[in-house]
Length: 403
Image 1: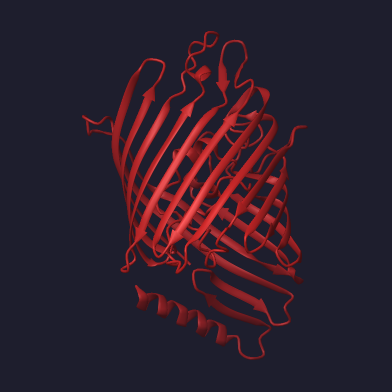
Image 2: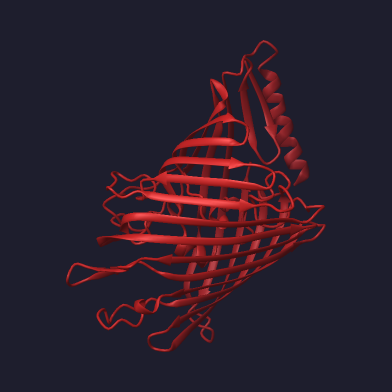
């Protein structure tokens, strides 16, 4: 694998030299950062990356009946990303496109009147950095919510994010973004539409998000707080404590930026707390998420749709051995508010509590860009209304390849 990477780098280096000394372009490769092309007069620069996740998965009908309830064989993600600068290094851009059907959030094309097409465009944002550490953005990208959501899906130590994230995520949105980062803290915020990615229109309500991160031991090694696991093998302990708050006014979709249309608009509040610790290959991550919405059940008189309000907790711990094999364990649970399963008015509403226990083994060949992952799953779905449980076991095998 190392020989293959070396040969690939040599090929791109040869490509760069083939332009000649008189060429206006410089081509080079950067470790885990793809191919970079820079105009010699520094009027523009572009960094190109791609990645794919090919997956096979299995989930049983129950703990006793190991007959498959579902099988998964597909290209889970296929992404292309471009970022760089134009005219001035302070004026930058970030574009990310998705191409596999499972990566377009298009399971139901009629999910929302605000978004009825495949979501090819994931990120399309312009940044301006007037001074060092201060950055402003305008466009579509991830909201500054829980850390696991902000971390790229290519930098995860399990095949997918947890049920806590899938339930309480703020996801992506379009609007104005800002951040200010120093050695021991970071402030991030956004004012956005609230309708999610690629929406065809917006209502009068806006989406407000703020995040504060504290780094008592200083910054992590470059990029090591933007990936799961301690691949940088921090030589001194590193800790990040963070809190995010979100108010999305007049939401028209079940999760604000995601989900089916509601029958009436609702104001929704989200709170996220997370902790990240890394030291010499050991990593620990803890996350708490909660959501509040006063009128969390909407109806058209005959049917209803609800906003999942309640609480979620995630714990992940891992260790990276010197041969770049990592063992990781995850425990995640989500619990709905009582009125979502014990409601005297809407008696058929019955949201479930879920608990997931996941064991992961990952072999890193070239960081997160080239890795093989295996996950074992044990999942419990608790019907709090009828006091019954469904227990399932499963497994996922995934290969990630990218530059």
